[in-house]
Length: 125
Image (cartoon, rainbow, N blue to C red; front, side):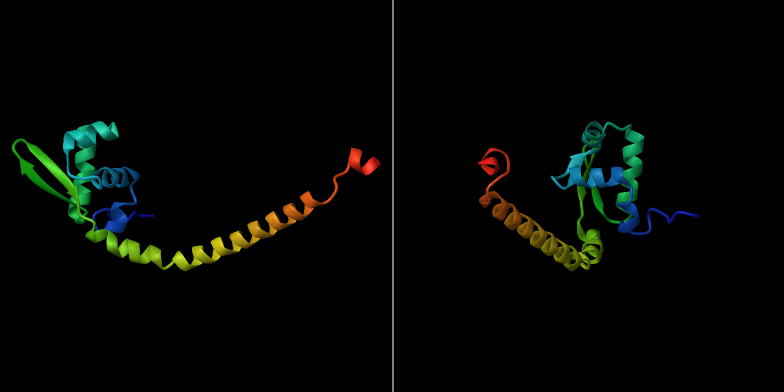
């Protein structure tokens, strides 16, 4: 099965874990390529390849400052991803509410059990 091109949209671009790591690093502010290389522990060509993909889908912007290329994150292309994931928010909310109910029932049963006499020495008397 052929894989979709990574440069078609932000969904494809962030499917690669290293690119998500780069975005995490850039979410803290603008960084030089060498900083990203050090932080990721990858070779410079690999980081540059990922940055090229992120730049092509608009997730990062680059500017030259002297001899350095500085990258910064552009969160705009993440909006469609956020909107898509958000559709499932209600599903998770419902599941967390059910989990809260189960935990409350278990706590109630535990409290009732703690109020009763226990077996062992007390029960033998």
